[in-house]
Length: 428
Image (cartoon, rainbow, N blue to C red; front, side, top):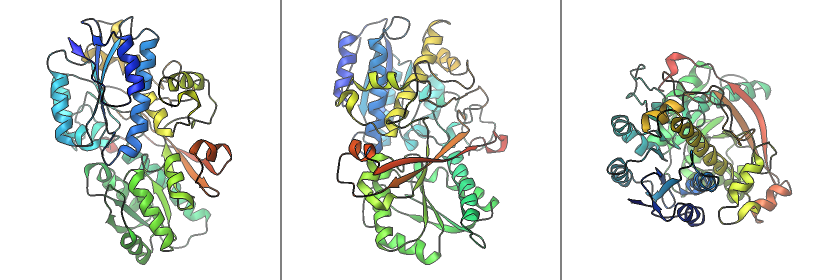
């Protein structure tokens, strides 16, 4: 018997536990959920993980998968690779989980070989391009047939941002070559798209400034701002999560740095805009969902019902990462549903379930999750990159919900970049 261990997100998981009788019976479907609720990426890990947890609890409230409940164990691993690996070993032994909702790049990449050997589908919140080559044909990374994620890869997202930046440079009347700089910690996650971004920038005619490092945690990054100011950077890619990016944005505003900041997918959201204030005004970043929380879509009613399962209920404002967590959970659940009807909810069957549809939006998530396609040859699920600009038009002391409602914080869609599915870009 596998027991549900609640280590955070207590309201949603308590409901899941109650619905499952507090213990996973033999017929229940075991699911692992690895989250960062306390580590250096918890600023975005908490809302994303809450979206995953709430969605899985909601699926249980509607009868689970083919009449079986999901026995979900959520574990906060604090963004520490050894803890992630140790937890994975527990999930892969005994009552083996049917799938895992994971989190970080360093831990996800470290376990590619494990999940492949054990045949456990691993839907992470890392969008490292190293996870996109299921057959290892690119020669750049290990074969990753059991790794999936919802959204464009970090590499494809920075490529799209640079396509936008090249157009922006021309539209603003820029002369000569614009200068691009990659900024982030010396860590697998921010480093993941560095090579791809710099190669794309060079291809598009940018001059490349040597990368500038700053830690994954908040701090005084005045010296980094002065470095890019002295180098004459025009476009800077912030590769860390929002927590430390906020410090950079504030320091650079104080230092009078005139640069267009481009955040990675975890680098900006509504909470970060509130924290950074007008220093966040104008930052562009990719968004993985069709709407933000205040948007309208056919799937919004399902989102509201899911949100009711945890603290704040349907009335709380959920940042964009929450919606993405919901989408990740729903893709996994729909693949499980296919597996249940085609031999049972085993790892290999769930993997095959991820391949059954093209331009796929899970039922109930219409207009929320963007159409995605995975195949046995290519795990780049989403090649369409929506680029948004964060607009901050005043003081940000009020709650996020009020700031969005009164228009102080606005998410403005500026471009959709449709990337080609080029074979030579698989895996990097």
